[in-house]
Image (cartoon, rainbow over all chains, first blue to last red; front, side, top):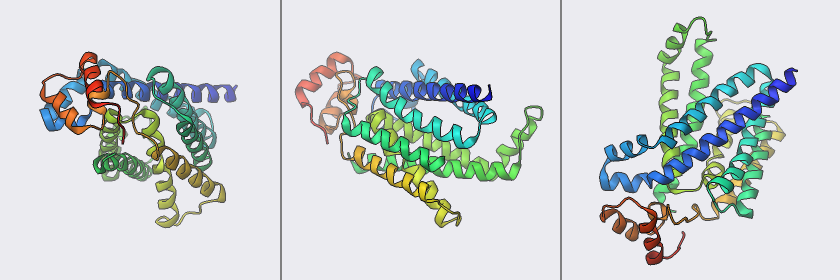
Length: 126
Length: 167
């Protein structure tokens, strides 16, 4: 039963991390290049544009839920399983979500990068 | 990719690694935090290591948002994963911790992944975001000076005018 809770926790962390990262990417693309905007209109306008995006707040909320899910998962399972599994699955999940929802061009090079980094992170923090 | 953009990616990497390290060091000094004694949370935040760690993580978040405003998520995440490598190297050479062969293997895999993604383009051009994320500075400033903020119609015009070049 504890095993099931641990994997359910990991799944929650991955889902909300991917949701947070994907929505944050979408929100920032809609706002535009922050450096160009700041140079042209000033920092105040940039902050206003970011804070007027509802997607930004949903993304921050998803990231916060992912953080607290990680805390709970760590209390249910071993850190040597939860941390590498959540981190590496998040990399793969982000690549899939970016292709489906953000319509990014995830070519062979990017898939290889995501898989190598996911494997490397699993080995490093496992 | 300009030098400034590489600097932003380096910021994401370094601020995350340094922030996590300082937060971890500070939390070890303050001890466990219980939900029944939330005042201990305030004590933890007042710890200088924790305070600097939080500031560094805020800087990480700002750099991350900046990077996502001009680069793809599938570019930013692998490119900034060198932070894991940085932490392992700090643990080995500054803290004199043992780094096992498996962890060195992990470092090699991550470095390989970063090398793969770094050689490719940083952004996928879409009709609705190319205006402000594209590489063509002159066309971008032209669009900005027109007072419009990148509506799809403007962007399509911009695409036709500037082409689909990538650095």
